[in-house]
Image 1 (tube, rainbow, N blue to C red):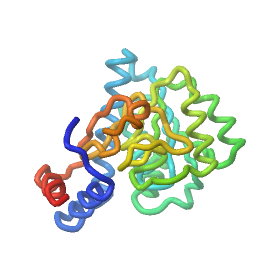
Image 2 (image 1 turned 90 degrees about the vertical axis):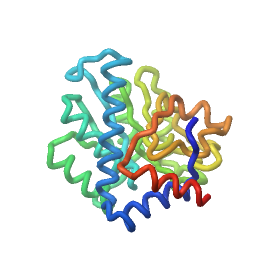
Image 3 (image 1 turned 60 degrees about the vertical axis):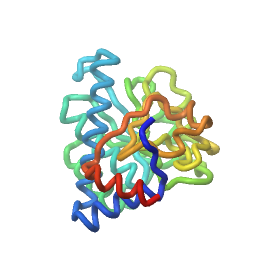
Image 4 (image 1 turned 45 degrees about the vertical axis):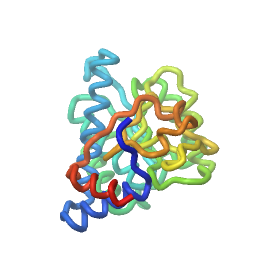
Length: 234
């Protein structure tokens, strides 16, 4: 596996790209989501041998930047002709920053966005996820540690119970600790993890193996020299 980065190192890469190079955060999110969408599109077309027009993808979005990545992924897949349905675990009115911008774009594009903010809504909509070819986990990002709250734990457990779809985690499987690789009370079991910048240090832990699946590193537009600088600084 490539050189691994910790939670703090990944944050430093983002911060330096924004503060020193002047790359807006929303550009980094756009690059991340577009390249992740490309990985998912290739999975649909190559591994699953599907006509894009007949492919179905469910994108599960949380309330932070990981959810923002999910909205970018949803619209890029939609633009490639894939049938996409988005499920938000939070009231969209509570979204902030880049995630709010990308939710608004999806809404204005007319993408179907379903709320799964209550236990009843989760139970109702989770039945439809089994009809998707790919379910995208964009619930929790690298900042997560500790315990997954009950509502998201229900979403994750229902995702793990699916028998048919491939599960693609964005940046890391939700519920997995980025640094230790330890699972929480509810952790997504992904077939593929599309991670950004570099694999995370926790992916190398034996405890992470059953959750991360195949790891693909996607570019977000940060220069390699910047990443090397952060690695060298420890």
